[in-house]
Length: 264
Length: 258
Ligand SMILES: Nc1ncnc2c1ncn2[C@@H]1O[C@H](COP(=O)(O)OP(=O)(O)O)[C@@H](O)[C@H]1O
Ligand SMILES: [Mg+2]
Image 1 (cartoon, rainbow over the protein chains, first blue to last red):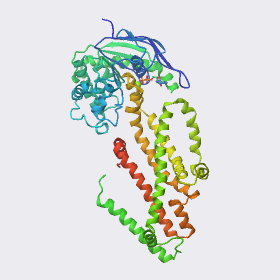
Image 2 (tube, rainbow over the protein chains, first blue to last red):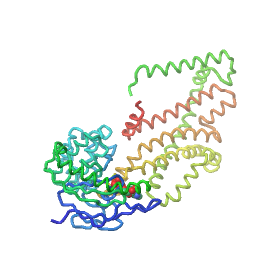
Image 3 (cartoon, each protein chain N blue to C red):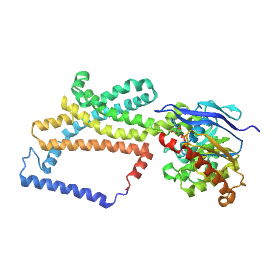
Image 4 (cartoon, each protein chain N blue to C red):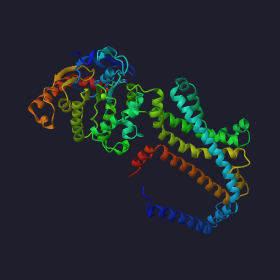
C-alpha cells in the first residue's frame, strides 16, 4: 500500500530574523494510513515547522511532501489540528467552538449538530455543551479542542504537543482517551511531543529528531500489543524503547549543545 | 461580587465624616467662602440653581456624547480599515499618530474658526480626544489573535469575512471597551475645554461664569455634576460591556479577585 504521507528531503530555512535559521534539514519519512506516529525531539528542533509544512500551511524551502498521493502545495483539506494551547473562542460555548470548522467550511451546521454532540460525549464532556471555556479546566478545554479537530471527520489528525501543558495525570488520562478514539475512528495520527514515554506509549512508529538543524535521527517501530494499557509502561520492552530513544537524543544533543547555546 | 453591608456602610460613613470634617474645619479656620465654602453652601447653591444646572448639563452631555458616538463609529471603522489595508497603515495611520501626539484641546480655538461657535465645535473636540483611545485599542484587539486560530481558519477554508466576524471582531471587543471607557470620560473633558474657549452655554461656560462672580460654592457644585456625568457614562459603558462581552468581564474578575 502506498503511504498516506510521504516527506522527501524536506528542508526549511527561516530568513526573516537577524540571521537565517535552518529549522529542518533534509527530512525524509513515510507514514502509513491508520498508523499512530509520533515525533520526538528537543525543543526548537523543528517539530512544529514540520507539522505546518505537512499541513500545507507553510511551504518547505526545498523538498517535496505528498499526502494521499497528491503533492501538498496549499493547506490540506479536512485535516484535524490540535495545538499545545486549546485556543478556544472565549465567546463561544463548547458546542459553538466544536462547530467552528463546520461554519468555516460552509457546511450544514444543523446536519453536524448530532455529530458534534456525540463527539463531546465521546471525550467525556457530556453536560458541558453550553459551558464557556473559562468555566472549564485545562484538560476539559483540550478535550473540547480535540472535538473541534474531529468534527469534520478528517482522515488525518495533526497534533502539536497537545497535552504538553497539562499535569501528568490529566495527560495520561487524555493519552488513553486519544488511543480509544483513534482505535474507534480509524484515523491516521501524527503526534508531536517532547515526552519520550508518551511517544512510546501511543505510537506504532516514533521518529526521533535531533536539535538544530532538525534532522531525522532514527525511525523506531514500537512493537507493543494493542490496546495499550498504563501497566505496559512498566514492561521491560517499554523501558527498552524509552532508553533507546533517550540515548539517541542525548548523544545527538551532546554534539549540538554548544552550537545550540551560541545561537540562542 | 457580593455587596455586604460593610461594603455599603463603610464608604457612606467615610463620606459623611469627610463632609462633617470639612464643615467644621471651614468654621474653625474661618476660610473665606470664595476660597472654600462649607458643604452647606454647596447644597444651597445646588437647590437654588438646579434648573440652570440641568439645562447646561444637558448641553454638555449632548456635546460629549455626540463627540463620543462619532468617535466610536469613525474610530472602529478606521481601525478596521487600518488593519485590513496596508496602504492606510502606511499613510493615514502615521498621520493619526502625529495628531495623537498633539494636545487635542489646543485645537479648540481653531475649531471655532473651522466649524463655528456653536455645538459642533464642542462635539468636534470631544470627538478628537475620544477618537484615539478607541482606534488604538481596537487596532490591537483586531490584531492580537492567536495565530493558531488563523491556521485553523485556513485549514478549514474559512473566508476572510468569517475570520473577521467570528474571530477578529469578537476578539477586539474587550480591547474596544477598554478604549471606550477611557474615551467616554475624555469626551466630557473635551467638551468642557471647548466650552472654556468659546461658548454661551454648557457646564464649562457655567463654571467660568461662577468663577467671575466668585461663586465658588456653585463652581464646586458644577464640578461635582461633571463627576456624576462622567461616572454615569462610564457605568453605561461597563453595563454594555457586561452585556456584549461577558467573557472579558469574567477574565477581569479573576484577575481582580485577590
Ligand atoms: N516563523 C518563524 N520565523 C523564524 N524562525 C522560526 C519561525 N518558526 C520557527 N522558527 C525557528 O525554527 C526553529 C524550529 O522551530 P519549531 O518548529 O517551532 O520547533 P519545535 O516545535 O520543535 O520546538 C526554531 O529555531 C525557531 O526559532
Ligand atoms: Mg513546537
